[in-house]
Image (cartoon, rainbow, N blue to C red; front, side, top):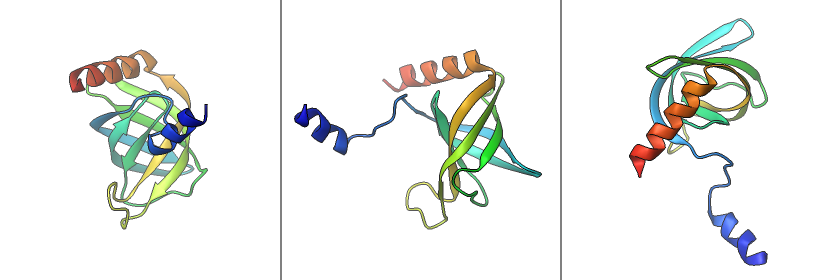
Length: 118
C-alpha cells in the first residue's frame, strides 16, 4: 500500500484523463463574459487561457465550442494562473459541477482525441 501511495506522489492525480484542445470558450461570472481558448479538457473540467484571472472558488457558467456542437456547464475556479506561470500562461482551471448540455458531445470529443493520441 505504501508503495502505491509513493507512486501516486510522482504522477498526476486526476480522476479523468484530459486531452489537448484549441476550443473557444465563453465563461460567464456575474455580469462579466470572457472569451478564451481551452488548452485541455476532461469530463471533470478544463483549463482555459484568459486575458485576466478569476478568483479561486468563483462560480462560473461555460459554453465550450467543440467544433461539432457546444457543451454547456456550471463550475467553479479550481485555480488561477497568472502571466508568470511558466507553462500555462494567464488563465483558469475550471472544475465542472454540472454539465448542463452536450454531455455526449464532450464524451465523444474526449474519447476521439484520447484515441488519436495513442
